Image 1 (tube, one colour):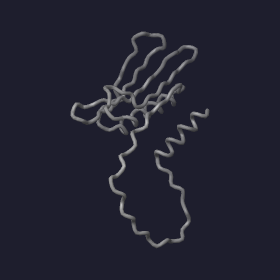
Image 2 (cartoon, rainbow, N blue to C red; image 1 turned 30 degrees about the horizontal axis):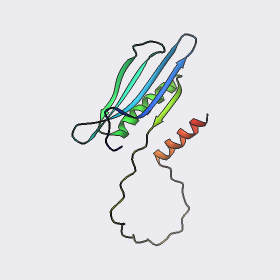
Image 3 (cartoon, helix red, strand yellow; image 1 turned 90 degrees about the vertical axis):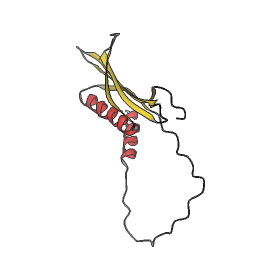
Image 4 (spheres, rainbow, N blue to C red; image 1 turned 120 degrees about the horizontal axis):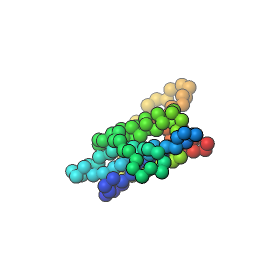
Length: 139
């Protein structure tokens, strides 16, 4: 994301709760902006209210230099709303720019002696989250 724009949205979720007496929404966004010193600031902002009302309320959930913490704040609120019966009608996250390639190839590492062991499947939290996202998109 070279040349970060002011308040560029890097992740968002939109949830609705509709039943016989309610028609409300909850929208959460992670926004990226410049801190004016060459760094980035991430802010998680929620907008919520009744559908059709022109003045929705806003609440800030996180502000700081970590995109990971801002997205964690988004996920926390999202899970709370889903547990209360909201239905997710939209979710989006933009991927980070790929890391820069090293100027020189790394020196080959020495291979340790191979041991015979049973292989265990290892799943990182990010891999589990991505899998859950794709599975939820199928439903």
